[in-house]
Each structure stands twice: as C-alpha cells, then as structure tokens.
Length: 355
Image (tube, rainbow, N blue to C red; front, side, top):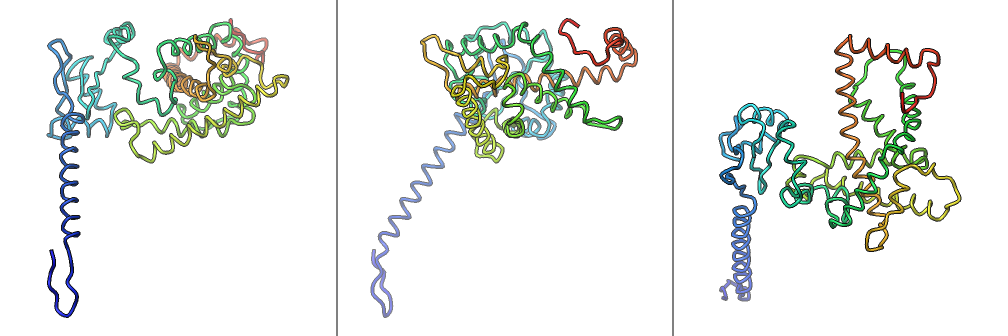
C-alpha cells in the first residue's frame, strides 16, 4: 500500500502493515499457548480418588480457591500446616500450581511413606527439585542400579566401626568451638549448633586437608546451596531467581573445588591428606556395577547430599535436645551427675565411644 504525501516521495507501508500482522499473530499464538499451559499444567487437580485424603482448597488468607493456600504457604508454611492439621487431621492434600502436596503428620501417618516401594511412592518424582543442588546422576537422578551403589557407599562410610573413629574428631572440633564461647553470655543455640555441625561434618566427611585448608570456602558455598532451597524451588527448581542463581554458581564452584582436592589426592598418593576414614576417600573409590568409575562431579554431589541429609537433622535434633535439657532442671542435674561420675577423676580425658 502506498500513501500519497505532500512534497515528498510516496511512502510504501506494505512491509509495516505485514510486520504488524505477523506480530499480532505471534502474540495471539503466544497468548493461546500460555492459556493452554496454565490450564493443563499449572492448574492443580483439586480432587483425588475415592480413597484420597481431604483436599485443602480454601484459606483464611484469601477467599480465592487454591490461590489462597499458595499465598498462605508462602507467608508461613509451618502455620499453614498447623492450621490444616487441626482442621483436616494428620493426612491432607494441598494443590499447589501444577502439583498436589500430601502432608503426613505424625509417625502413624508417615509409616506408609517409609514402607511403600518406589512403584507406589516414587522418590525420584518427589526429590526431582534437588537435582540442581546435587547435580546430574546423583541419588534420585541416578539410575536405580547406580543409586543402590551410591547408597551402599554412604552406608559403608557411616557404619558403626567408622562412627567410633569419628568420636575423637567430633570431640576435638567441639572443644575448640566451645573455647570461643567465653565464660558467660548469650547466644543463638540453633545457629551455634549449626556451626558446630558444619565443623564436625567437614572433618569427618571431607577429611583433614579440606577442613584445615578449605573450610571457609566450603562453608560459604554450602550456605549458598542451602539458601537456594526456597518454597518456590519445590515447584519450579529452575526458576530465574537470585537464590537459584547463587545456588547454581555455588554448586559449580563446589565441583571445581573438590575436583582439585580429588586430583591432588590421586596425584600424590604418598602424601598424608587425611587419616583415610573420611567419606570423601570412600566415594573416590566407588565403581558402578558396569565397571565404570564414579565421576568427580558425582563425588561432589554425594558429599553435598550427605551434608544436606545430616546437617539439618543433626542441628535441629541437638537444638531441641538442648532446649529440653535447659527447660528441665531435674534432667540437667542427672546429666551433670552422670558426667561427673564418668570424668570426675580425669575431667579432660578423651571421650570414649563406649562412654
């Protein structure tokens, strides 16, 4: 199409109109695809089978179905779970985006989770959001045969005979850490025990060379990995957020760091890097059933997985135990008396596993 102009050459706008039509068609297609995606993927299923647990779709935070529970969960997951437990009982399902989360509260409700085979309750599907943290081919992203080998190597590193050998290491880290406390004052018990758990874990899992030379870097990288797990991660593990970006960078740096440690150990086998009881030494020697060796990236992923598995449970358990002891003078008195009976003659004696 040509438009006449005064005192100027005619302007051909056919290309402009054609470009606008193409853009309009493109935007229309994009809108339709977005709606279809939202309907079939993001739209949560609000009903289960006839024997399914009750489904939570309403929330006091917002009157909008489904949306209210998402907002409530984002504000405070603990408060929401407490509310649903009181209203619906120990087992209930909450639709979130394109997923349905079923909560099992208490030992009786949780029993089927631990007993059911993978064909009934698939661990791979549940823990898929951890792949960006652990890396490819590790734990729940590994094939069933490779995962069995990985779990066996973990169990080998945590058997009783090895735990006995960790006693002296844990004692050393604990004594050194307590020396920084001073004679009196206040502290955040959970934060303090989290720090202590990282120290002991690094000594036992990574070895003396990592604990003595690289602890600060490892601790910071773990911090970024840990804070890369947010409520959003469960639903969209690769969403372009600042936390996910730092998480991905931390994992890449962790792989690089431990890759250098592994290479140094293999290149200099005659040098004493550690006492050989650390779990890193075990992971380095893993071979899968097809004969292929484990990769350095997978070794790092297993170390991260084991640290995640032990860090939270250990510091939370020790914090609650300490709080119960401090809140009950009678129990505190019994514990102090027991310690006095064992160490009265030698207060600085080394801790023995049997004691």
